[in-house]
Length: 454
Image (cartoon, rainbow, N blue to C red; front, top):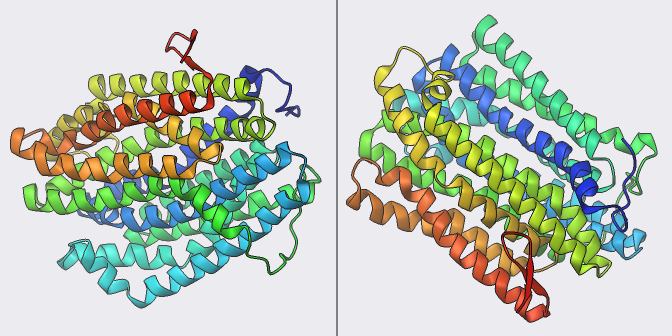
């Protein structure tokens, strides 16, 4: 892949340089969850699908912490590189890796010690408890390598090597796919086999991104970090929006599971497992678009090139809205086919999931705007604004919707909670963005791309 100059190359070509690797990487990330779900649904059964749905909050927590450190640290690194301060960029990388090692090790030790209590929090009981415990127990043993691999991939992507990050993710996904088939359909290891396949695939990701440091490309070097902690607070504060984007998926899923168990039992939880697994694919594509914008925005913000920052944001928003609308149309007209990927021979489950999916997917056009504006604030070192947006859209308004909408719409209310949250958040996102433009004295872009002065 040809090198890119973030200071002078056209925004369109810079965006495309990062878009395919970033989106491909995020799609592959979602396949870790989706492939497991499809294989388990086909090879083990609907009850196992419910067990996997109950582990999503814990999976999301580790991913959220990893991306908080990776995205936060790599965004700061890009800004330092934009200013020509390569030594501080290297220090940010080293401290991010050290922080990841410390946090992930402590969490894994805690999770393994209180494993039964964690599973009880999900509301599982009986056979569902055992399946959930089996899956989570094996996954925890791989989460340190998992976290280090994701953090390193963020830095490798921003260190002018997005292709390697993509290739490592694709290799990891293919490993997961092959091992899922072997462990579930050939060896009949059930949910334990699915967890083991996913864990081994994380090791492939880690090994793949390590190659960057032996290739001679980029600025970063892999070496023993100095025992410095001065950048860690800034890494965390900058990455908090990403943490809340990811972790609120887990928290809202946990709340959804509680509501659904009380609403319709295991059938509703299993239907939600199908819907959320397809939805996560779209969410990760939108996040990939945000990741493609982030190094361009961060670098040009560091270089005080505000017009290039604006152009990048507008291009990202238009691309994300197109993806959101396409996803909604697919869920509306092809929901039966999507559901059939996960389960067959269960008409009640297929009907419920097919009904829920188009309602849930109403969220995505608005989500596209919310995620890109939050990514902008994160990339230009306004983490508090991005954090507030991520919190209200991923948790606050979702919980409010779950409290209000089922009473107003008994059949559809629970599935409309996320669209409600995204609409409410979009109002706030646009207000905060317009206020930011006013404060900086810059022109505000119309949706058409024309400008007017505030």
